[in-house]
Length: 458
Image (cartoon, rainbow, N blue to C red; front, side):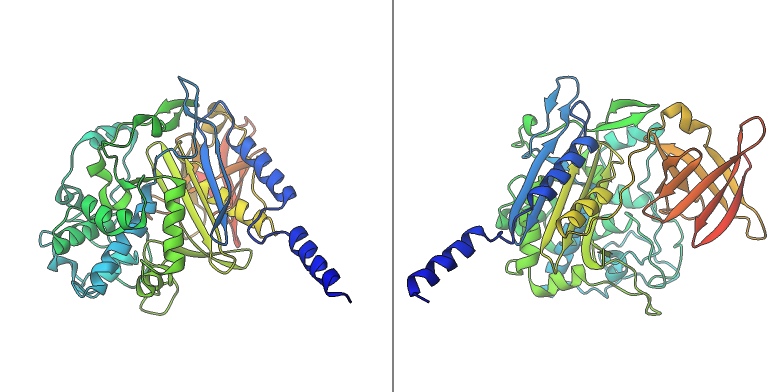
């Protein structure tokens, strides 16, 4: 074949071939349609970013930043990211370990002398890996919102739970608890000689060019860049309570944008500024002492999506919900920042990523039940039989929640899928409520691998 024709054929092939870092037109339409339904134009919404192979292939804002002024969200707005903060706190600890300024096996009392000795040794590794057994403290109800406006020293935060007994021997179980991270913040400050805000700025955000990220807001973040946060009470949207940044500190105090969080994702992927050691520690699943996987690294959950490994973490703070999801083998990053409490950002991120990889998961529609319809299911239920466990069904931010009073941190949302039938995708639970002749809810049958009957006791 003539060389000229070979060259033309190669040029045409390259020209018409889809770039790997590109979302198909059909996938793009599916994503747009879903997100416009998920975040209506007249409601609080979200900024969504999708990146493939190091390139942003989708970035859009949906919904309103200010309901009263009908101000739309913009893609460069700065959100509170809640517990996504934990990955940065973890990275900072690991930087200090790498510099031989501390050890993961050091007891926490070496740096936080006012945290009392417990029955068992408690190390920095236990705190990072959420295997410490320290109970959750950061669960403030509506009647305690005033606490969010009080300035807190790190010591004041820790004193909320310092005297509480451990729930189990450290290292033997995994149980997520935000209480671990104020302790780690104190370690960073004591070892580095800097405030946590300054440490983050000097050692992470500034070197990486994350100019819209900080431990809480700074004076140079213009108000027009910050959306209002919202939550729901009795079916009505309300402005989120005001928060003082010192209250959320190392466990949930970072504010950021989708673009800056993409920069962070790239830093972890490229392993240039952030070392192999740090990335491996952050993203390798830890095990309990008996070798059981925890599903958690340091500041990241390690899961899978349609058989693909994922590294992810979300955040929930008063008026904001966030999620960052990374598929390392496919090099796909999805970030969602929403300005409303208890949004299902993790499920949405999973769904969007599954579309991009061409293997969509099923996602339930949002519950159509109004506040009054949900109220009849609320109450305390007891399992029948010998194992008389108790469960509460309650409304939090107008979401129906299953809550085990004796197992902190195990709350899951349930969504209506049919008359008297609810599901939780996160926990793979199906619940069917039963009624008496007068139509009153009397109990439910729950299916999760096995089937159990529960009776309403109040």
